[in-house]
Length: 271
View: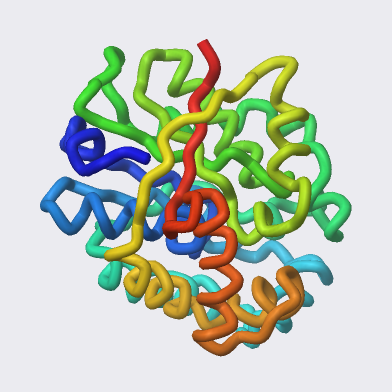
């Protein structure tokens, strides 16, 4: 476990979120903790732009919208409103990077097997584009820390964000990889992801951060995404969508990795 001094070692915290909601779920406690002592904390939503104008939505995208209870015309505005509500709870700023969700990128991803399979070959340059969109100086600034998904669960957008984090780490930036929730709640999901990364981008254990005083803020932020609760918690995790059921499912995991105290755990690119 680390204390505030380790978190205060940097003055700027940048949380890379593949989609609207990933930071609240995966490291909302740390986001709230660093914001509480006045550090600049920013969430960069990577894949949050509107679908291309005039491009018909795939049946898969339409089904996803239906599952969220949102009409196509209101999806992005609704998701951005949810993100803004969560940001107020956590005390963070939000920036939107210029990329679209996988379900809006043509016909590359039209079912769950595609979505949780290998990234499309013609998107190999996306991680580099993500890094470029962050507007960073050529030399790494060690007063800045990035929090990037580990890619647990294998969602293609999360994998692209992981690869961007690896690029950042190899260029000398301080990068902590977070365990993607809800995916990490499934047995063996974390181990499987670490094993898949081992050959080319091996990870090693990084800090585990206690978040007890900020637990309620984390849960409040998760609940700020009502369009996603049914999909995440009832369909994926297999629990209900009440505050108590959601908090219990997340706390069980948080206390297990924290040795009995609620925590969020991070990984580093192995030297």
